[in-house]
Structure formats: C-alpha cells, structure tokens
Image 1: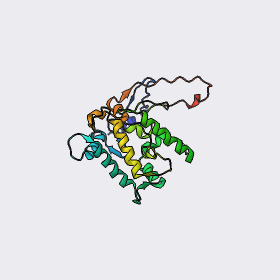
Image 2: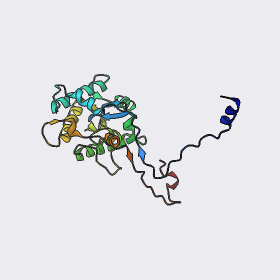
Image 3: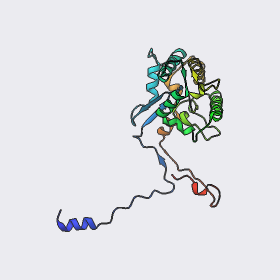
Image 4: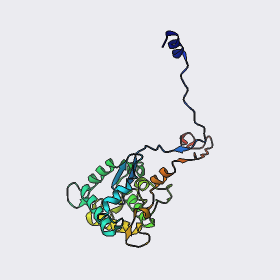
Length: 237
C-alpha cells in the first residue's frame, strides 16, 4: 500500500455498529450448544448441527435397539443414572450429592432464583410433584409461573428439579426405591397411549428443541408506563 493510500485508510471513519430496529426478531444461533435433560434428570449435550441429544439418551436406554423403550428399559436406565449420582454407594442421594449434580447441570438453576431454606425446599418439592401429576407428557405445558422452568425446558415433563421431585417423603434424601418409583410414574406420564412402550417420535420435541425448529420469532411487545414500579427494570432484548 502506498503512503497516500495508507493515510487515507487511517483517516477513514470507523464503521458504526449496526442498530437493529425495535421490531427485529429474536433468532437462535444455529451453532449454539444443545441440551437435553432425561426424565430422571440426566443431562445430554450436543453441538449445534448435531442430532438433538434426546436421541442419544433414547438409543442408550433402548438396550435391545428395537426402537421401542419399554417400562423395564426406562427404569433400568434410571437405575444406572442413580448409581452414577450415588457417589458413596449408600442407596440414597443426600444434599451434597444433589448439590454436585446441580453444579454439573446449571440449566436447572433457572428454577432457583434465590437461596431457599429447608421449608422452601420442601414447598418446592411438593410443587414439583403437583406439576408431575398434572403433566400429560409431550412438550412442557405452561404453568402459572410462565411456562417450563429449570430442567423442564430441556425435557418432556415440566419438572424443574428431577431429583428433588423424587423425594416423596420430603426427608431431604432420595432413596433408590423413591427414584425407581419416580421412574415408573414418569414412564406412565409419557406413555400417553398406555401402550407400554415409548418411541422417540411419539415423545415429540422438548421446549428447547421446538425453539430451534423455529429459531426466529417476533420480538415481544412490552408496555411499561413510565413511573410505575419496575419501569426502569423493563427487560432489555
């Protein structure tokens, strides 16, 4: 480059960043990481462009590779996951073991917006079981809290914390028997036709997977009256 051209290049104003219009749609990046959380809480992840990781879980759980996941296979897969979580092999998941799971599965933190004491934890577990009973399988349906939360965003049942949701006696420990009972119950919730088996096609997309199938969506219109509480905290998109 000649000295004159170099001086002209240096003198040229820097390009201004593109300003998106207010009605620009939200679009999911096609190469963004993908996450699936199994009905009993095991996370599976894949890179953008790879098959959605629910297929990985299903293929592993379907031990005879017939394309149909039986109740026995479903419960056996849950038992294998329980053994991975049960670090001290005492047939119970205690708070320390569940806390380790939470650190490795940050997606479920969407449900826990603040620290909770023992009573709040029991209330949350009770609410998770109510949601489980109301669920009919398929993509997580809306709740009074604005839709699927925590692990519910990445699975077929809107159960924000799949492990604490199995603590039926609320004693802050999930036993192997409670975990197996939760597996049997969740299989029934997913087996909407009562056929005794599940297929990956029947289960449909998760909430996250549905978002990826239609990555661009209109920007929501949020009206906040100036001066009202929360006006300055209106969501920025």
